[in-house]
Image (tube, rainbow, N blue to C red; front, side):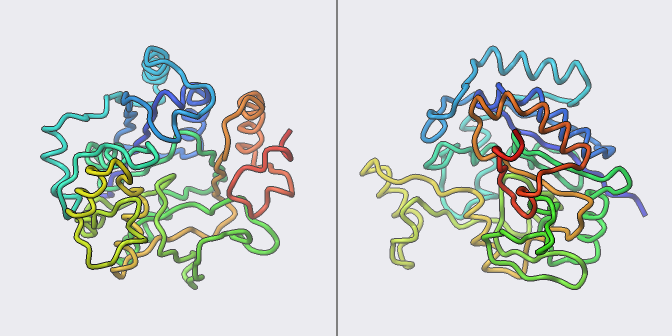
Length: 313
């Protein structure tokens, strides 16, 4: 029986220039896994929505230079531009959506096509994705990717696997988790909510979730009978609204099926999400990474998924 292969897919844009040279090598080190492919995708789109307000936005030239340095250093194996062409969208989108869509980003300016591209262009049976600002701890004697793949192989109802959200606390690994979850005796937390910040999927199982129902920004306020094509027409005609977040579209499919997400309940691997990317964070980042890789975190961070920056300074 052949061992399933796993790809690492990373997506970066100009908003990531100020920290990607530290966070991406950190993620690859901490994963410590023989990926069949380490793909770095460059989203060269014009920034829109919330992303226009991000601090420290770099130039396209800086983004390409950083990517080349990561390639030269062997951190990634391939660097490719996100294919935003109509021809690519016309070929890929009908598989992913139940209605005609041409948008590449959602109403906030976050990538939708980018996530899809990172899965479609990966070479492995499994695909691991991280947002470029994520921070990860993994014990030297443990590998959460291997554990996650093994879990998915025996549990066909698991759509994706993640490390613990935040370092563990005395109150439990997910002491401050806002999303509803249930504990499974097999050693993980069950979520019906998908997150696009980090995920590992079985590509074939992911395909079984498709197509996603197309929803728009005002979908929660519309009558459920309103078809997707009318939402699209309404949004484009009025200039209001936009494509919903990809993770919300995925969550809707979780809720409509038996699939769920599994967060591994072990202190041997956990993630932290930096909520802001201000100057204070950028200056502290090298020290934060060093501490996380050593398995250290301030007591106030325990059970917290979002970075509590003031306690790391």
